[in-house]
Amino acid sequence: METTATTIITLAERPDLVDAAQYLADAAWPEFMMHDRLVNRYWMRLYEEFPEYQFVLMDDQSERVLAMGNTVPLACADDVSSLPDGGVDWILTEAFEKSTASAHDGHCQFALQIVVDPGLRGRALSGAAVRAMIAIGKQQDCASLYAPVRPNQKHLYPLTPMERYIEWTNDDGLPFDAWMRVHARLGARTLGVCHESMRIEGTVGQWEDWIGMRLPDSGEYVIPLALVPIRIDRHRDEGLYIEPNVWMQHSLD
Ligand SMILES: CC(C)(COP(=O)(O)OP(=O)(O)OC[C@H]1O[C@@H](n2cnc3c(N)ncnc32)[C@H](O)[C@@H]1OP(=O)(O)O)[C@@H](O)C(=O)NCCC(=O)NCCS
Image (cartoon, rainbow, N blue to C red; front, side, top):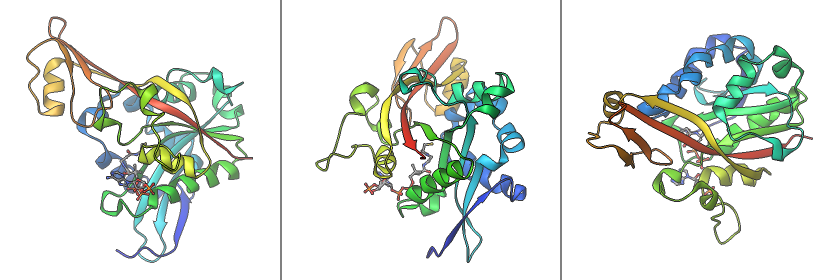
């Protein structure tokens, strides 16, 4: 498909596009990623309570939704070293479990995800989606955009500590990781690892269903598309995946 001009549309302007946006998001992730308890508890409230911070990128000619993104407003970090070890789960907890003051007084924008239509990947749309996110933050007078970035090639190196992985660079000095590189090219700086961005728990049987693999012993397993190994405890009938992400900051001044 030839892409023509695109328009950023918030879901406050077009609530009828929530289903199209969510359809893209739901199709983007491996099954096990759909079982973070906090994400499942709060996600749809993003569209009800913060629709002006949710958006799609639409192709003007075809009116096809090319990409989508989710963010929320929160109080700015006092200083960046005070950003937590949590990421996605922490953002949702701050937005929906703390006093509303936290969400509504704050004037920083916190990213939750960007998804490009799978049929349109590799066409540089991800940069346009980050620019759209930044434009929305600026429109809302946010001082910074903080993103717990999920490095999209880390799953190929599940045994490498995230601290080390995010230091890998290419010859031009930009991050080795493609998704971090998109943010870096648009001016983001890397702040550090958030070790517990998402937490996904299930019984051993659930994990076997989610990933289509038998898990006969207790211990660690490398599984497809996870950034680090999962831990299985057969005695307690538990499996746990704690996903680390990387805090990156775009200044919106
Ligand atoms: C991550 C994602 C947003 C990237 O979108 P995209 O439109 O395919 O990416 P782009 O075409 O803009 O390319 C961005 C960079 O990634 C690189 N890239 C794209 N596809 C790649 C692949 N399969 N393997 C390695 N690098 C890849 C591109 O070369 C480019 O880097 P460069 O310009 O330095 O060469 C998209 O793959 C996606 O929606 N993934 C599922 C959800 C997700 O992981 N979102 C991000 C975390 S919330």
